[in-house]
Image 1 (cartoon, rainbow, N blue to C red):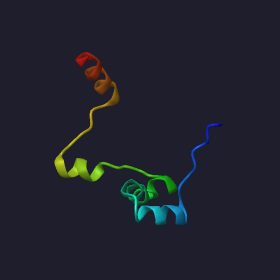
Image 2 (cartoon, helix red, strand yellow; image 1 turned 60 degrees about the horizontal axis):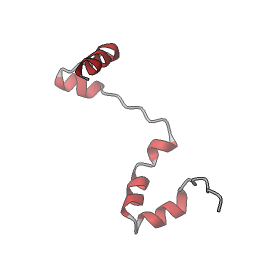
Image 3 (cartoon, one colour; image 1 turned 60 degrees about the vertical axis):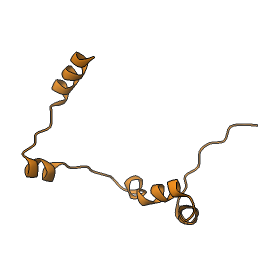
Image 4 (spheres, rainbow, N blue to C red; image 1 turned 90 degrees about the vertical axis):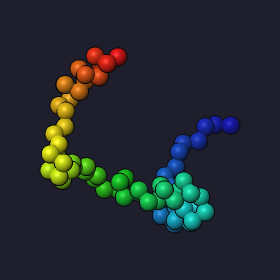
Amino acid sequence: MAARSPMALTGLPLTVLARVIPIVREMAEIQYQANAPFVIDGAKFAAGFDFAPTPHREAIQQTLAAL
C-alpha cells in the first residue's frame, strides 16, 4: 500500500469533527493563524513591564556557554 499525503482539514469537515474530537476542536480554534499572516508583537508587554529582549547574538552566546 502506497503512503498517502497529508490532507488539509478545513471548512465543514473541520467544524463537524471539532464537535466530537477534542484535539480537532483545538485545531479549529487556532486555524486563523494559518489563514492569514500572523504577527506577534511584544510592544505592549515590553512597555508594561519595562522589558527588553536579549539580542539574538547574546542569547546564542549565553546558550552555548551553558552547554
